[in-house]
Amino acid sequence: MSDMISQAGDSDSKLGSDPTSRINEVKEWLGSEFGRAGKEVPDFEYTPRSVSHLHNLCTLSQAKTRAAEILAKDFRLKAAEYRAQAARIREILESVGMAQENLPSNVVSSAQVLANVANLLNIRDTELSSFLVAMGDITLRKISVEEKRTKVEKDSKVLLDHTRKAIARLTYLKRTLAQLEDDVAPCESQMDNWKTNLAVMAAKERQYMQQCANYKAMLNRVGYSPDISHGVLVEMAEHRKELEKKTKPILDTLRSYQDLPPDKALAALAIEDKKRQYAAAEKYLEDVLHSALTTTH
Image (cartoon, rainbow, N blue to C red; front, side):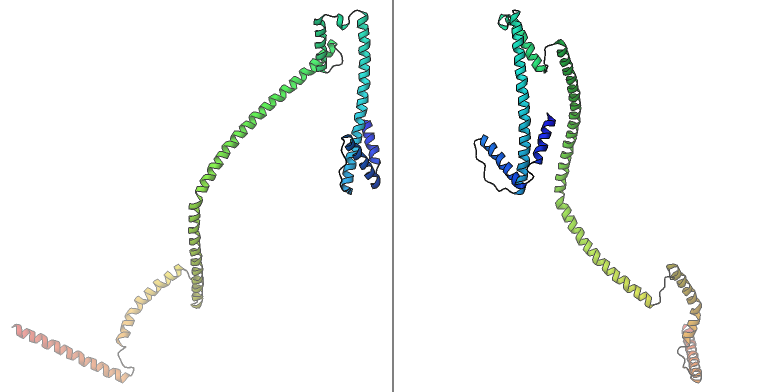
């Protein structure tokens, strides 16, 4: 049957390769289909795309129609055979006195039930072997269904567990979202504060970088080199203190000569003047001491 349908489809696909013949086939098919329904074919534009689509539908519909006709013919043939066989069986039963109207009602009911069961089990006869085969098939189907049901129950339990976990996670996420929404306003104010502080820090950074550049330029001007470190400066300070201790007596001596004139003669006169002043001061001190002693006595 399937070979006949495929051959019909292949023969239909070979036909109507010309666009004009395709349009004529489509028009004829539409007219016949709408005519069966008692309606007129609606007006539309026959574009290449619509014609191709309708032609495919036409080919498929015709193939299915022919397949249905073949199946209907086969069913009618089988029905005639079944009717002929039923007539022969009825004649045989009537000849042996077992016509339906001569049988008891319980026998007729049992036969009807047996026929219904055979139709339900989809068997062609009422032999015991056929019933056993059908019952075995039903048992196998029942086992398969039970296995599938067990598997579905397990899958359902797993899905139910996943659903519960998903609901719990969704509840947690909703709670977290609500908490985050409540924290938005404080966080925004804190972010604004951080932005302000960041701007201040950026300004300070630029200021410090400018000061650092100025200090580097100053150090370059005074001859600073990376070899000068804190330890070196400490050693230099200690060395300076030692030099100051050694030079202090010399400086004191030199300061005593700062008032002297630069000329040697003038310096000698200045020294003589200082000596006279010193002698006068000693004489004045002696007079004062002498007068003090005299007054005491």
